[in-house]
Length: 77
Image 1 (cartoon, rainbow, N blue to C red):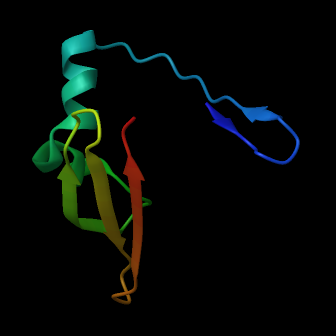
Image 2: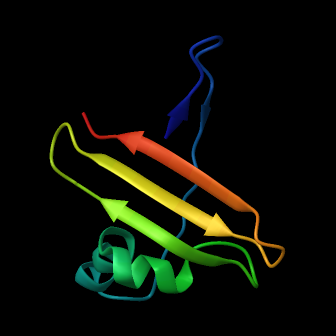
């Protein structure tokens, strides 16, 4: 859930997967698997680093077909 600091509104996105929980967890938490599917059509994900411990950081970069990178980083608290 994402919550805005300004107005307290939340954006919640829910999706049901017909797959075992263990498999879904791996697709979101193992960088080599995550890189295979993350991003829009025709994008690649050349960089994925995940330290899922408290205080760790998740860093991912998607690359468009024209070579532009779109990176995101988040901390785990």
